[in-house]
Image 1 (cartoon, rainbow, N blue to C red):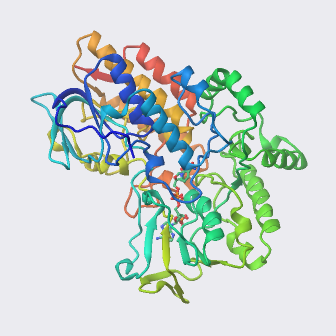
Image 2 (tube, protein in one colour; image 1 turned 180 degrees about the vertical axis):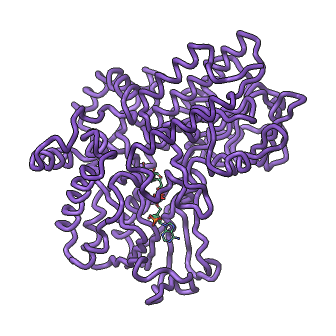
Length: 541
Ligand code: NAP
């Protein structure tokens, strides 16, 4: 809980900018706006800061980026004074970090907490956004800045009968603040994406029995999390600026990058030996510090996929269970690759069973548990690790209406259309931090976020200094950007797979690869060049 929750009573109702969200993006946005002296208001529906790390309190939740890169870079003092305990920090530690940042820079006083934005309507005559909160307040702002996250609209699937279930149920992305006690309970987890793969080993250690309901088997790479030694901390702090600079210009915002080498040019044994060496390092480097054709060449990808399948076979003792867990039929890495701590080993436990929903689909939820086509699985607690309406969901649910009352849902009926993932035509003075069409979820999020916030704030400063009131993308620039994002994605294996990157996890959502996959460093350079050319592709008034 935040130490102080400011009231909105004495807050201005007409400001330069409204920011929505108090995660990494919202915190840095209000920090920059305040430094620039731009009057602003900021709203957060939770009772405190943290965003993703405020909501995702499920057991085992942890960062998949290393702690020394999964953090802010804007303050060298902050970097030196904060010490991470381990390689991949867990949710409580990340939330403590964000609380610390908010307190250290006095950012909580910028936010109205417990305040949900229910509508933001562009008023063409007043040239203002009119932002309505659920609490009944209306605030006018010249600029609307969304800091609502990419994976914050939780998705509970429409399985019939949930209202009949006698036990407790939870979604990993909206976890209670009090720890959930699984001891002595029969627990079911539906979903084997990153959230399921992180929580399943922890829940299995507590529960009397755990039933995992798996629809699509997932690949996963060991995290090999470990505490940071005192020597490692000293070394990291000494080199931190250099590490950060490497992240800024890399493909996925990490301190490593693809090898400038194609896997298929190597002899198979050399390729496999390198995969094994990288496997031992743990983390995303196994894939994103590997060969550059892994995500573009199906043959190279298949060798890597088979390498992981072999690891699963070697880990899971029961061959029938192993067969069910082995992913087939889609390229590895084209669903977001989870990192795990003992996920496959968990299926060797006596108190864990696996239900393959492709063989026996869920028919409905009943009072006692989950009814599949074969059995009723009796449960006391049910956990939905079923993901999110990614990238567009957090924005469309804000009730944003642009010119002529058009909603984002209407504008994006065929898939998101943006320029650089920062702005969208017909919605003047709207900026989206890590919006669809930017690298966002394909990189280390804090790196993406800081670059976007800096770009937006520099643009606001430019507008202020040059007396410009309105900004929005030109139609042509937006169309070209959309075509470029698609062209880049089509050159990879990603569109071959049903994933949340493609919107495929949400019934009725257009099947479009949403993030920009040209690499974070390339994107950063492009954004800087566009700004240097007087914000080429944008129209000002
Ligand atoms: P997800 O990757 O979308 O996985 C959802 C899982 O639920 C999938 O296994 C899916 O099966 C299953 N599912 C969905 N609807 C279902 C239904 N009706 N019946 C049965 N199964 C169903 O969601 P997530 O695990 O929450 O992860 C989402 C993203 O959040 C991640 O990819 C990652 O980017 C981010 N995240 C990050 C971290 C981290 O960095 N530490 C941790 C957690 C999440 P299908 O595959 O068959 O659809």
